[in-house]
Image (tube, rainbow, N blue to C red; front, side, top):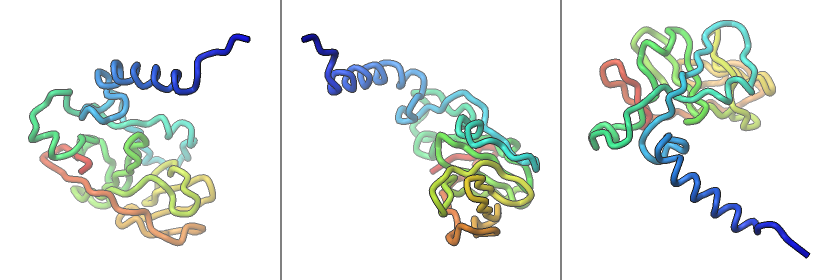
Length: 168
């Protein structure tokens, strides 16, 4: 009786392939480089589908091998101009949503709803919205604006250096 490869063999082969390919493309973020896809900006009143938003990734960051100083400052998420005033942008790969409640004021929160741990779907009308069960969170402080969630979105640490927003 002939058997295929073991689970261990498949996992080891996949891991080896990722080590060879992921570090060059920034696939898992551990190399310090970011993917080159554009962020998903959701500042309109239309609801984005969870599937579309879950494919969002961060803006292009520094190249692999960049100066240690910029790597220590955190991963580049976006330029300040990419975050709409009174709205925000979801970075699904980093599990963060960055908002700009007032011009020049930037906040960051987990993009995972505190109700049932669904990823939030969009940012519109001053709230971060989870379409799984209808929870909404205020862009200024992550507090609950509309249940069923009862706890605010956890804050994430970012830095703004010039026109660059970095996740710390």
